[in-house]
Length: 410
Image (tube, rainbow, N blue to C red; front, side, top):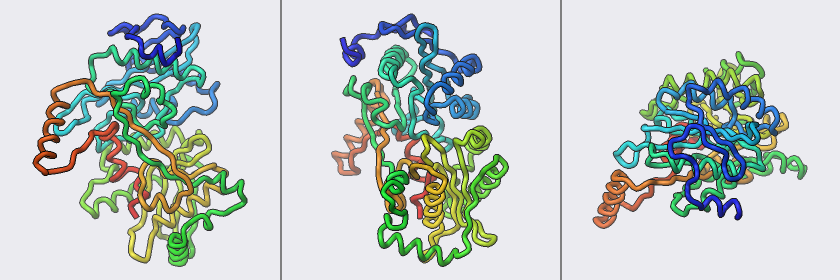
């Protein structure tokens, strides 16, 4: 029997077990409550040291920091798997009552750091399973079998994964609803290998915009965080610019959330010394033109958040900040400059390639889903609106389109 065939077999794990017996493929699985996180951290960190650098969203540093900030609004546990008594994989399971289907709150279960209230959400992207490559499918099998046995959720969500990470699970059950978002990035490694340059890769219209901004900010200088104190200084300017920009259009801005701010301040202190987060500030004379926050993952710079001086018809500080950021990342040897999810014109015009992230949702039948579906059908028949699908990850992902990772807003 193949692994995929086995994934279609009936549930074999105990329905309410915290510690499950050895599975049919030799994995010993255990579900550890949030209060016991400290007991697994030493093994988790040791395993990280043995891996090739794990994806940032699956690391103990990211997870522990998120947990300390959001653990009071999300019920967390760790699904762990071992072979012959040796840990081989860890996945966070986050259960939430903060998500909605239409006007109704529902119980959701997320793999990874998800399920927070929308306006406070970290909006996880490039989510990942922390498991050895050769054990990934088997680990996924055991995780899904366990989750199927839990009766505490109405929707099971896989937020912001690359499709190949969860493809086998999506193929197992056709009831998974899939929502995909495009990612745009500048492939710095490919440009370097071809002997080309960044500027020539841009469209003629974008080149004109860059030239105009370079003339306006003729004395622009780049500052890159090398220490925690430098990162904190740039982060403070980023928050100020971001909040001013959104407050002008009547929005609170994500940093109005004390929880969100606290999460990023603590994350900064943990990740900057590890080289997994960096900040950049562009200044011209005494004016701050723009600030960028990068997550550093597999030698790529991922633009997570930014703040810019006000935009005008002839002046685009966001365009200049990202263009100079791309040049600086190339100079520092990063392989790509990734704008993360979102397909705005701003992101497209500064990119050479695109990718995809997916959100998968498994819905259990329930009165909330039936009422929302009925309401949409009635509206469609009456011509009051077009039909809509509640996409996987819609609670978290919608925030990206407004205030998180907002480089496209220029």
